[in-house]
Image (tube, rainbow, N blue to C red; front, side, top):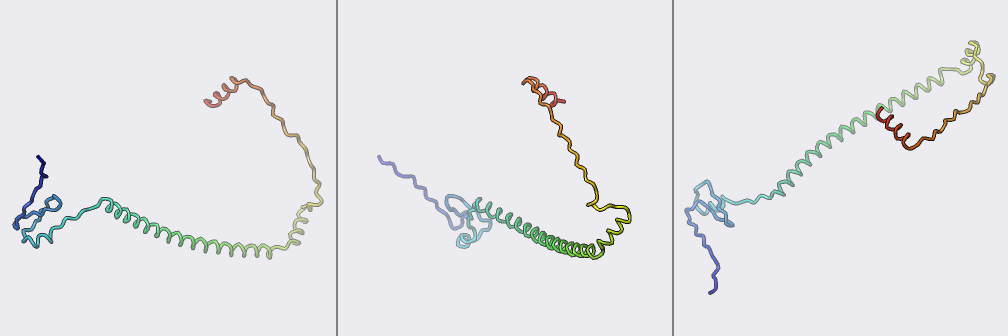
Length: 155
């Protein structure tokens, strides 16, 4: 005898408060007529990967916003530092100009000679030669070097 397939028939009444879709029952809270009930109660499948993607995108958007704020702050600090460096360069140029214009080398030389200084050309130079000390090389056995290492290591 051939086996007959098991077929189940679902019968819904118009007054029933449940809608069967894909073998699941979804209950509606309102007791509306059947034609309105079909439009009001819809099953929405939620994909967890899509939700994780949306959450990840939101987190990245927040991180990008904070990064943009830090970038703008760094640009402002960079502009302030470049202005500070340009002011220092101007001040340095003014000080060098004052140094060059403010002192007369001949006047300084006269003051130095009057104070008793001698020109560098007239000073006698003495060169002393000293030999570099030589370190003696000691020949130690393997066990002596190990004991010296351990003594230095645990000292």
